Length: 152
Image (cartoon, rainbow, N blue to C red):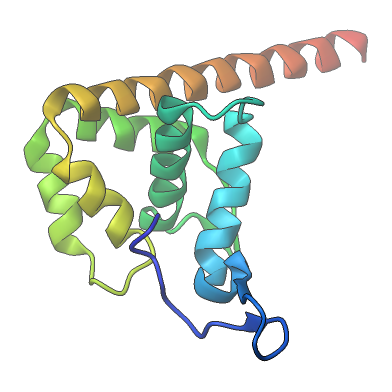
């Protein structure tokens, strides 16, 4: 996410010392919400994993692109994101359409733009990773609901 520098940067520290920047200072609040939701679903591993991190970023971008929110809070509609991700997986033209439909300032633009720069194989691996985890998440949620109704 090195290209996402929207908003004002807050500097932490005293003059003459190294300066740290809070993530929330240079990431828009919408993107922070979407990343938080995505990380909850993706459950990042203890060790960095390129495919999981890339799929998490794609999920956050998808939430923002689909504008899944109630008032000013974003949420995840798993079924819609699966359908959307499948369309991107099926055709590069669909990804190009998404990128072209976004303004450069949209918080999801850098995510989809970066995805378009990858080779087809890399792009496919990222989208397949996301689809696999979302489908697994959906099955787990359905299982929890079945158990809940069975006990009533």
